[in-house]
Amino acid sequence: MTDDHPHHGDHDHDGEDHGHHPKPKLDIERRVEAIEALLVERGLITSDVVDAIVDTYERDLGPMNGARVVARAWTDPGYRARLLADGTRAVGELGFGGAEGEHLVVLENTGDIHNVVVCTLCSCYPWPVLGLPPRWYKSFAYRSRMVREPRAVLAEFGTALPDDVEVRVWDSSAEVRYMVLPVAPDDAATRSEEELAALVTRDHMIGVAR
Amino acid sequence: MGGMHGFGPIAPQPDEPVFHERWEGRTFALVLVTGATRLRTGSIRPAIERLDPATYLTSSYYQRWARSVEDGLVRAGTLDVADIDRRAATGEPAQAHRGDTDPEGTAQLVEALVGPRHPSGDIVAGRFGVGAKVTVKRMAPAGHHRCPRYVRGVTGTVTMVPGGWPPPTSDGPPEPTYTIRFAMADLWGADAEPGWLYLDLWERYLE
Figure (cartoon, rainbow over the protein chains, first blue to last red):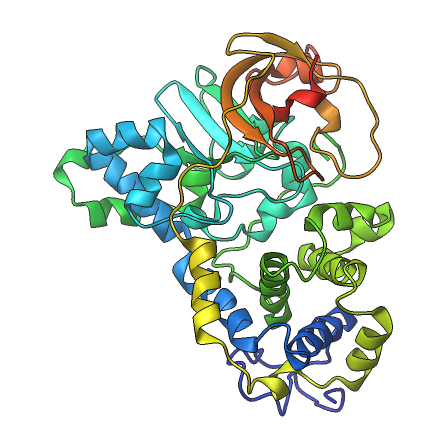
């Protein structure tokens, strides 16, 4: 249906107008569409539930959630203590939880200790606070190398660790999901939570940045 | 996969979208919906691991998910391969059928996915406590498991006991898991980088 279209343009993401498709569909793309169509036609699911899940993970979940958690921990010692004692409940206080965050453990970086998270099995990742993982986190290169040569991998990310900093690599391939609490900036006490949250990136909370 | 050589450098992409293609998002959502509604069998991991190694290594992440969601739907008897083949050949998109909506069911499912929860993990009596030295069994199991090759035969120390969960491919009862700390040198040899590797393992993998 689309193979006669001459141009490769932006992908149609609005989900409404599919009279034209900018590039030929992959076989896998056709199969996924066929599976969804069959499930909908047979009344087994509705399309709006699929739309809602896509929207939720595109808009509502992402590192901005984890950044709020980190900023709160940097400004509120009581919250920090609760976060380190029971990550699941503490992120729940800020409204975050659910799938792939059912048992969250927060790892505290210090001047002497650097934590970094990987999943050698596949892609285990704390969705409620970080959203879905980037491609590189799921890549064979990251999964194979981070457990064996973390300092070399961190250096490639621009994070050269001094020799006296202890490296702790967490391979999260069972039920616990891990998030790193980065070291607070020196002037954290004088800044607002919003300002601090803006400093925190996904890479800080995976541990490939420091 | 842990410890394997030859996959080259890691290539982060700045400002990466959550889903690179529309079908990736549909695939992701279909995995969650069909899992929650039990239209497919079990976890998607065993289906992914049934892929032959050449297919596994040459498929993208969401291609593997798409193959496994189809596998689970077919195994559960929800769809059959011939129907999917026929429908895919028409190229008719699912949007042609978006007359049916279920706002209430949708809201419930989304809430169940992202609603705050209490920590999972059951308190179950286990053989080991914090500080115990444990050795990972040497084994070569077929099918899905959660014991990476690179720790087999290696001794480490229990540092946390997070709780019990049903073992992989099982619906229960919960079995204790342990967070175990391994020295890098014990995993990779004397010329390993200094440092520690932490991994959670079910009790069945330990002795």
